[in-house]
Length: 177
Ligand code: S3P
Image 1 (spheres, protein in one colour):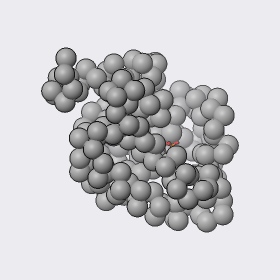
Image 2: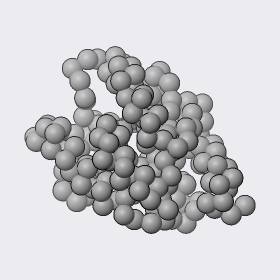
Image 3: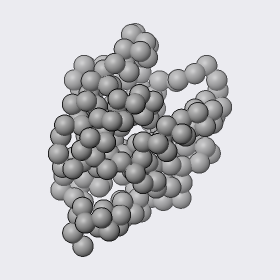
């Protein structure tokens, strides 16, 4: 069994995922970091030089591989759920948690995150706030369909998010009390 975190950029997948893995003594894999290490490109560079469609192909390949692991916490990129086959691969051996946050919170977190420039290419020609608002709206049904549980992270620390996830995992006897 894997624990998979999905959700829009800035919802805290990487921070909570890393902490959760430490708590469970499992390995943590961030799909974007995995792609960057394997192919030797920062995600933004890949988008710029090769275009989003190549990134999406690499992302699907990597997710197919990650779905075959066991006892891993996996953070998927924010757009991974847009392809049904990615969702199927993530769910193959995984329980999927959707991390949500409101638009203003995501906007502030993305602006503050110094990884943003290198690893977070822009996805539309809109200004950042409008891009977040419209993509979050568009993707909402994809996220909802892909997840088993939803955690709101707007007012939570990564520690709170991990506690909430662990509570659910205990109630399902996936981890012991
Ligand atoms: C993307 C989100 C990014 C990364 C890529 C595309 C998206 O991942 O996969 O820049 O389409 O929302 P994070 O959600 O980890 O920032």
